[in-house]
Length: 122
Image (cartoon, rainbow, N blue to C red):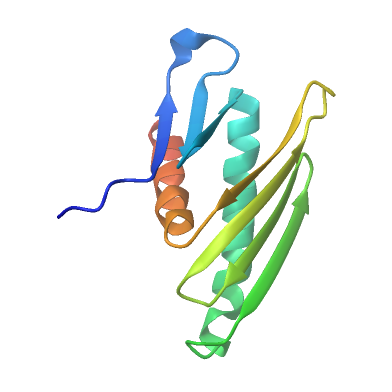
């Protein structure tokens, strides 16, 4: 039996202001393009932190990495090969704030899909 995909990532510029949707299990959030762009840049930075120490870590060694790059606070927890991500978003426009949690293995899959989506945009 195939495992059901537990996340979704959609882009629809016809929707106007909130044109990106990220959803996991029973929740979803819509992001503006500028929010999606800053999320992508923050994900690249925390991934760079991980890659910088990955070769020094044993497979089962637990790690926690934190990145605070406004409007995002990101926490990566797990091992060098399996990790989860927790996000806190504080709107700079003071319109809304929210938290997201991406469990193992969704975090890795969604990170790579966001990277592919961002790189495919003109």
